[in-house]
Structures are given as structure tokens and as C-alpha cells.
Length: 100
Image (cartoon, rainbow, N blue to C red; front, side, top):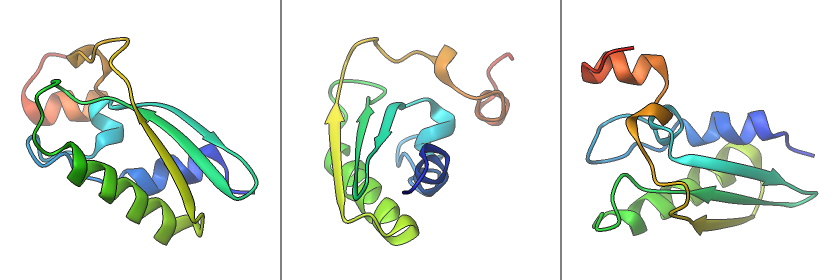
């Protein structure tokens, strides 16, 4: 079975087109629940009006499938808790010029 860490590693290949950083470091991935041959991922966006949500979802499915072999990737867009810069990794904050 594929591990949560392997799935998160695959998701680091998904770049938020508006920010230019991967969705894991930006803090958009809230939950990863792998099972035998599928994975369920809860994620959010930096704003509800993000016009690129479909692009991010397709990239998530593509990267997870290509890097792990899992063919069933279920994504759930959630808004609670609301995203904030506090969810970003230290590396992402430094790259974008936010205080650490």
C-alpha cells in the first residue's frame, strides 16, 4: 500500500499557478487518506474565487497516479478551516518574503 508520505511527495509536483509554489508547501493539502488502491485528499485554495481550481485538481490526480500507481484519486475541496499564510511551510514563507 502507498503511504501518506509517498502521496504528499507526489503532490509536491503540483504547482499553484498563481503563487508558483507547490500545494504542499503552500499548505493547501489538509488530509491524505490512502487505502489499498485509492486515496482521498482534502484540500483547499487560497481564495474561494480561484479560477484555476480545475487545473489544480487535474494536476493532483495526474501526479499522484504517475508517481504512485494509484488509479483512483478522490479530491475534496474544503473551506474549513479557511486557508491562511500560517499553513505555509517555512521555506514557502521565506521564498515569498513573509516573516518566519
